[in-house]
Length: 368
Length: 126
Image (tube, rainbow over the protein chains, first blue to last red):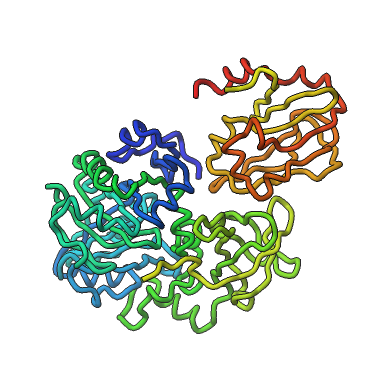
């Protein structure tokens, strides 16, 4: 991407991160913390206790009006009519040709109000895309500036956050949310996350973010809460096989290929991309996303080539060490006939083929 | 922080010369920048390495970084400790987590290296 030194965008917690010693990076145009104490320590804290992430860079789009549901159902793949108020689901915006505009979280606030969480770098594109297809009696608002978002993740996330709110968190089921208060600040409290662990994502007014950040830290102190950056967020989501835009999914990848058929409802009526998906389903996909584990010495990383019997066959979408599993794992696209568990592949690590084998996913699944 | 009896490169390797042999490592600054180190790829015994040419790599959770030979010569020892315990590079980069030892073929190459004070100035305050 060629960009003329446009200034990085900053979340309301930017100064806090800097004062707390975070290492900052440019993440899709945002100045974000990549790590505090260290990726491994932060990763383990989330798996074993609790960690807190600033994810205020994520975008929010509000859809309101009598035909809000009709609009979201026309632009997104999952069936929003199956949501009850206070429920959320994972979904996707597609182009007509079936490729991803973005992957999104759709929250049903009320019959005439949907709240959509989108990727930071895609926010403006998503907003324009939804508006372009809004032939409904609905209003679309780009609301990213009205929300900060903090993720509290890990087995002690509930105990941590419960100290700051009267909303009975145990009553919020996974992928449900409640509107209430966190330490007297208006908050949308969702039991969602991007770590494969139990936890909450709270949407709050930006002006309240620094105060709540501090209060969450104090509340989690007895559980040795850790400040976490995007580095740990990435290792955690990869272990849980959650997709990352521009890696597993992008404009040239369809949900069938990305192993995301479960977020597509073909029989709900027409939606953008449906015709292309139908056609691809009839023809059959030629490539598919699969998990792999390194067998030889070396780490397969994002964009490394994958060989099958000595010939180029695919590429790594995300790869690296899995701290919980103590193995080197990754996701890659392979020709569909090779996309099965137990397939021997070679990942090209700095010019050298290193043995790997495809495995079932997710790599990590939390105990119930 | 940076021992006076080492010489340094701008690519953040250090070298300690004893007679015609040099011990090579990466600096405290390098390991700090990389973060948690999870994998180290080193040249084999007997490999001839050339000053400023890549000889291997160090990988952290999130990044891969090349290691460059600070001086030319033949690899006469490889630190086996790092195969199973790459994290030692974070704990003791100037000590037990040295990378390789080289039998020097061009000792005069030290002229291209930085002193401890110069390296400290190069990386700035930490």
